[in-house]
Image (tube, one colour):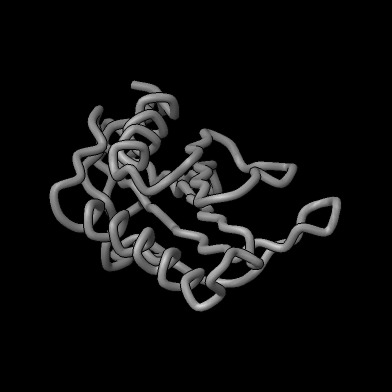
Length: 153
C-alpha cells in the first residue's frame, strides 16, 4: 500500500464543505489572507510509523493532518467571533468523534491520543501580510492507517 494523502484530505474537505459553515474550504495552508467569513484549510503536519500498532509484515502509519479555521478578528459583532469559531470546531470534532469515516485503510481517528497527540483544537490569532488579523482555531486530526509500508525480513 501507499500513503494516499488525496483520499484522506478529500474526505476531510468534503465533510467541512457539507457542514455549510465555511465560505471557503482549502486543501492547503493559506499563505495570504483568505477574506471574510469562516475559512477551513487542511494540511499535513506529520507522518510516521506506529510501532505498537504494526505487524510483522507491514507498518501502520500515523498521519497527522491539521485544519486551521479562520475568521477576521474584526468581524462584527465582536462577541460573535468566538461563538462562530467554537461552533465550527464543535461541528468538526463531533463528526470526527462520531460518524466520520475517512475511507481507505484508516483504522481510526486517534480520538484520545493512544499513539500521540489526540484529536484536539487550540485557539489563537494569526496575521497575514497587509495587516489583517484573524481569529484562528487549529485542529489536530490524527489518522491511524493500517498496512502503509511493507516490511522486508
